[in-house]
Image 1 (spheres, helix red, strand yellow):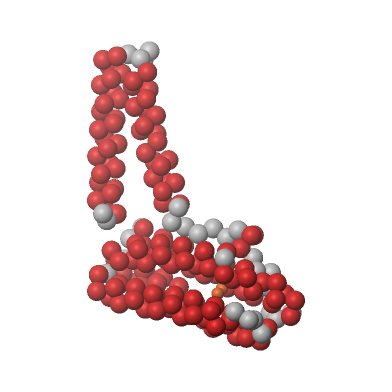
Image 2 (cartoon, protein in one colour):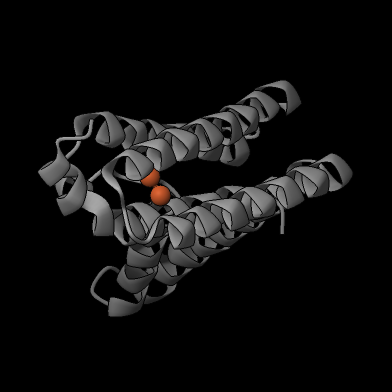
Length: 189
Ligand SMILES: [Fe+2]
Ligand SMILES: [Fe+2]
């Protein structure tokens, strides 16, 4: 379901609830709980919508830190670029803006992976090959998404943005944490 259809359905639901609220107030009076329950549902719509939208955005947490400033900077920047893309996708800012936002995430992800791998190599990280493989798979997935975006346009971006957000947060807060102690010990930065 696209954003416009969702908005239309929400407006329809809010309108129906509003009419039902007025009618039940008139029919049952202010002392009856039913119209008040309808008022609560009416207030709940924007609250739930807001919560749902926020779920798509990534928030940096201190626990994501790998203890190396340059890599933390990269990770913060990646999350911020993902949020930029989410904004472009969910607020339908137009093809030019969303394309630019997508290209920025892709370019910075590739740049970051390369930089991280070089640092891991320098530190003699034992699991480097496995880590590189994960990066490689992610790049392949991104390239797949880019092809899908070329074919399907805007609609494909909703999945792309959510996938990128989930994968990156999981990777930063999981696999990347595994090299943290070694890089700090070796003083690689
Ligand atoms: Fe990373
Ligand atoms: Fe990584």
